[in-house]
Length: 524
Image 1 (tube, rainbow, N blue to C red):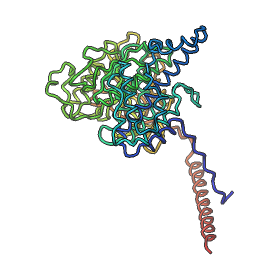
Image 2 (image 1 turned 90 degrees about the vertical axis):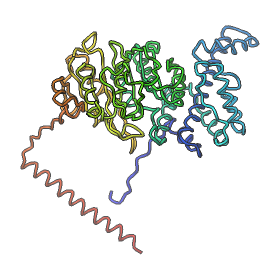
Image 3 (image 1 turned 180 degrees about the vertical axis):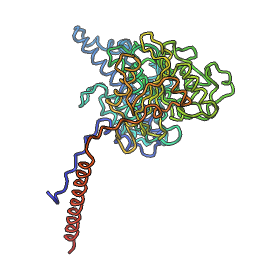
Image 4 (image 1 turned 135 degrees about the vertical axis):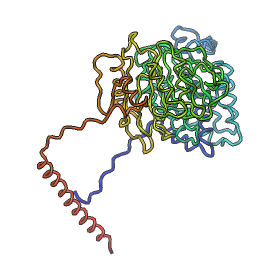
């Protein structure tokens, strides 16, 4: 009925992680996101391992009671650290347990108490020694707000099933917080520790790292490894089916990765320290079955004179002003004879011919290493508008249980996929990821189901790629989407469109009259 106000759609209820973030961010005060990140995630780590410890303690007590062990004798078993470490649970000393911290949340000494707890946990668990954040007692961190943050995180039961039926409460909260911090940081390195989940999932679903050695030489906070572990678990595999190797340049981010993986129970060799993968390769002899990576885009200050004769530059010395093809050749160098790499690069890598990049790209294609190129949609990343593509390079291009499509490259144009989750950020849903991954697998496995789809995918032979001077932009190959057949006679179409147009004119006049009446009704 005219004049009735439209009922606004109810806003969807906020998720647990959204509610927690809103509160935690409100408690940030004068802290920069880059610093506050470690305050919050350190407490999340502390709460989670304490929850796991308490859960295991309760299980031990139940087991002892069931065995008829007298209560007076149970204490020695309950405090036996082997009963915890043998079940992949961190040993948490009394003064580091969450109930102790929680009880002191309102005291002015809470910062020093948390620092002490971090020291005790590291001392008892060498695998995370030197990793946990400190300096909670620093003068600039408001202790009242810190106590409120302790109370907030204390409200999360990380080992419980939440109201959505998820038993990965920790994973969702930790990942959500990482993404939110990446969105708040500013500067050239902002978000470098975090790759959007839909991008990681696309890489993992295409590579399918069921078993073998997985390597990421610019691993950020470890998201590639976490998603790989989820993939293995989803396909009824064991985490031990995958051996994880990584490296990270920034020390604070290396520590984040160590914490992230420790929380998930993922054993990983990230080296004994943070280090530059070009100047100080911590895994020089590693030959990985899978490389998964999102290297920093277009890095200009990576070169060192000692790299001039590096054995990794098989296809040409990369330009000193851009590390993109240094990364590509680093990935190829570390692949096993049957290995495949999937990684993210800025779109410029597909077509640049400056400083020898075009020659390196040509040699990679002629060596039959380039498997697939996927042009990704815009606005997938929180801190950059640079268009990106996914590269897949493989040393297993001639069968051996996989495809036999030597001399071909699959091009996929996925730029129209995804949906805007916010005004700034696009995400790929399960159906989008499946469309890209299924296309790749049907082509790679040569099972007869693959077909070129104009506007979306094309398998191009090397001669065609050479005719484009080895430019690898998918839009050059997939062509335009086929237009739907239009069988409507022109006279009928004109008549139909004329009716629609005139109806809109009539509706416009009705609205004008209604607006005039409403305005007139406002006059005294």
